[in-house]
Image (cartoon, rainbow, N blue to C red; front, side, top):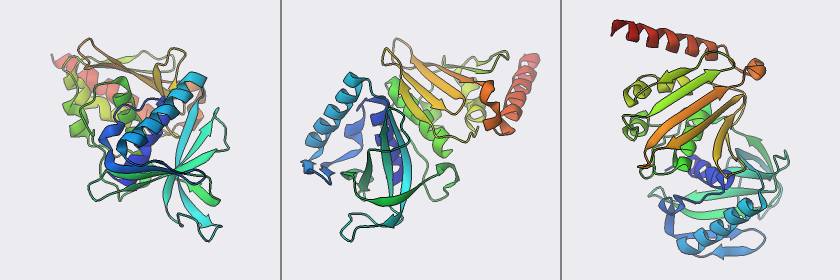
Length: 279
């Protein structure tokens, strides 16, 4: 796991207010440190306990959280913990453009997080467009996906980075998994089986909007992935396997989309129809 991937996984934890899976990315001696309060968690268990209290508070207060990956461009304090070029997350509440604090992570040689730092130090930052990074390894599930949050997180990372291990992703697709895609008022397109998903799903995911994916919670704590005019939900079956991914694009914001969106939809429809005609 890379630093960027670790940051995106923590982003999904805070935005979804769900720490499921956190134990798989933290080293046993992982510390949680605050620049204002010092060391809060001295090991993995204490760090998980603190993160759990954070997410429970977010959920109880029904506070929407927005995280964005950034890097430091200038440092104003001589004794600052981090320097120019370092990546981190900004954390905002109530969809505000003004972030409250930043999060940084240290990743050890085994690809596990051994320190999380919550910082309110004074830096100049720029936000990153991760889709154009060429030095990152592909993201793969840390462990087998068993919850809606696991799938929503993977979809979010796919849309934000366009850099996932598709073979790893597809190995967890059930043979009965369906995908429903709809753009505006147009007729929806349905991938009816796991095999169809493996053949065509990447075409739906290779869309680019001038936006950053975020996970939001509905009134019943269900998770929705938003990405500009695009929204997606995932549903599991009774056995806990992925049953359905539903993707909708609101065409009222179509000016934000690239021409590629319509092209993908047209090609997907044409290809699907052609194969059905051959049966």
